[in-house]
Image 1 (tube, chains in turn red, green):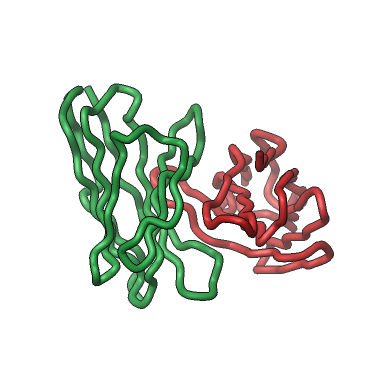
Image 2 (cartoon, rainbow over the protein chains, first blue to last red):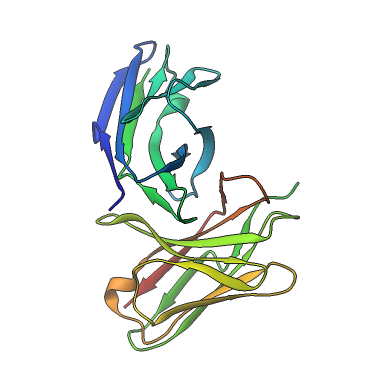
Length: 110
Length: 112
């Protein structure tokens, strides 16, 4: 069965303190790995899709990387507005549903 | 382009009742998926519709059903509501040949 595990569950950073979020996965035939950001009471907002090991994508202070077993979301010099829950999801080639991890709740203090 | 819209945004129902939620996808998107999000279970896949046909279904009881119309709008129905059905119900759409899904704001369902 496909599995997605995110760590840590919660992370508190000072503004400007860079860090990484981890997403470990097991899937039979990866179609894609997705990162989303979710603010309280809102739907997830799409950030990145990664398709193959070695791929990297960047957007502002965020950078996502992918290996055959895990993905990292690196946050460089975070700001308080980066505070949110970050969700990782995998999609297998054999079907179209996404399996989500439980998320990492990030808090950035000014 | 307008994003995914869901109505209603909030709903309070009593155990045993049924409820219908509505989702309008991004213009041009023909795939619509539904998810249930709870604090304990996280985001769980319910089903996906494409061109009015259900293509995939998650592990939920038959009380959860859906349909899609010719204009790609989708509805989700839950019959005989239980307290455990209280959740944020999210709809997501995606375009052809794109795998990322775009989510709506969700419908917060409370069952009392």
